[in-house]
Length: 168
Ligand code: ADP
Image (cartoon, rainbow, N blue to C red; front, side, top):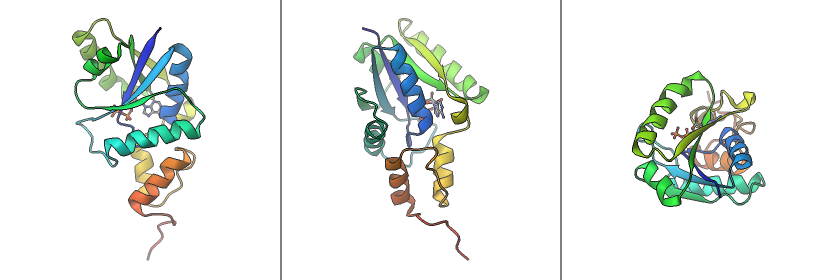
């Protein structure tokens, strides 16, 4: 059985992440999502909140059989413990490439048996990031095209923004 691990901050999960999940599931027999800490980013949601939102989003989108875990520590150790053959990452534009290339080569140095596999996102998601979604929602914008309903609701609660944000 060919199992893979899809790690990320998922702060919060977007349709872009879900697109990668769908693509990876076609290629691997089993896919596990790991919500991990990224020391380069300050998170809006706690790891447990993020995991809960990933689970709800998968359910809302009708994607079953994808376990979601939280993990803090070295990613490659998580991959080894799960016995996966690959780490899945998503590529949007060339801007992702440098960082992803560096991560993939580092992880290969740490364990040469585990490959990093990149899936190219659908064109309509190539500009989409969790940061953009948070920025739009913070000011009361409509993010329904970018994230499932459960995520939109969670963002509304965090930012307390339901209206248009037009205050004078
Ligand atoms: P990280 O902090 O580990 O980069 P993210 O949650 O931002 O975590 O992203 C996790 C993975 O999903 C990364 O490989 C990222 O490139 C990919 N990803 C994020 N947004 C999209 C998107 N819109 N389309 C495709 N892949 C994406």
